[in-house]
Image (cartoon, rainbow, N blue to C red; front, side, top):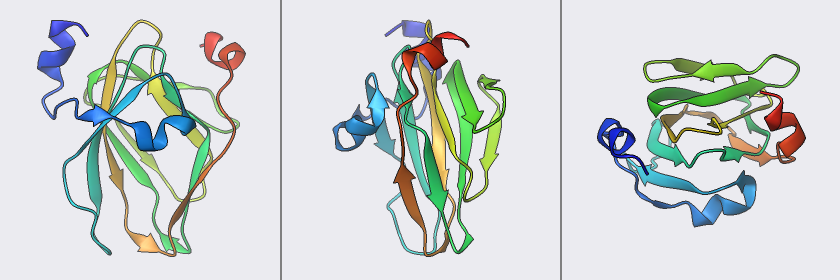
Length: 140
């Protein structure tokens, strides 16, 4: 990991994200910043090694819910189903409503960190879907 990125990643690398590794291509790291508590937002710094991305997924909720990404270090991608990918850099904010199929991760040549905020809601769940293929990712 490059020293500039390490310095910019002020919320810390955390531990390798082994619990969710099956839903990522490449290595990711998770540093929880708050304790998950019903009815309150949960904040975690997620760091992706270069080229790492998570699978397509949907944050379901009967009411409320969704996710917010606060980009803090490096460069990444965010893509919603049926839309063009969005380039991400520190300072960018992505608001992802419930029921939107999407993925996010690092660009090929850059580490990337964002604070993932799980928005409270009713009957929330996360559905992991297909991986983002190398062919699809390489087009970005």
